[in-house]
Length: 261
Image (tube, rainbow, N blue to C red; front, side, top):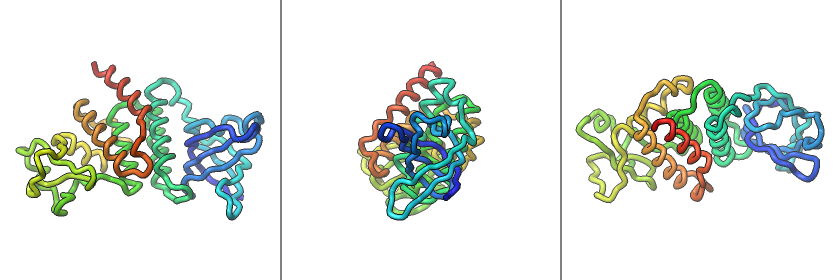
């Protein structure tokens, strides 16, 4: 019997009485398990509600993809996320990305901590594009898919001088190469471009602690351009997401647009 802490990413009925649960755990990565009798029994209470952080015990038999979950208790329910549409949309988007991008049984305590920190942040802070986009940046960073914005993806030279040069108003971006092309590499006129403020924001948010993200203040158009870049980057570089719909993200973006008008 293994005891673990985890965050519920998905839960759905399996057969008539059981539930299939996908959990991002602290020590063993993402695991999928069956909770016998969880559909009608009060044995598990509301432990498997989406976003819950639970303490649970399970049996992992060799050769089986699914573990058997025998006990589960709520450690933190994040019930405040359900108080408005913005919070639940953001939390739903975050858990969906984690579910789709994390590998089965690939230990990543950093990913678990990131998810927990953002659920706390969403529950205690008004949702903003800074929070949404920063989660994407930090998630990609921890999964090894981060965009390269500190050096040129063509020649490998540092971009420190370009970033300090206030006469450079925008930067050429190569989605397929995964980052910025420096001014010395003379990118074609048809290259995609990202304005200076958005590039600076991507640099800042990567190193800003989660607890301080809400204190960042960038213009909303800058954040929208950053969001568009991240969508395209995620679709291109993240396995299985080339046709990802971003429904929760688009709904949230629409809600936040209305707040700024």
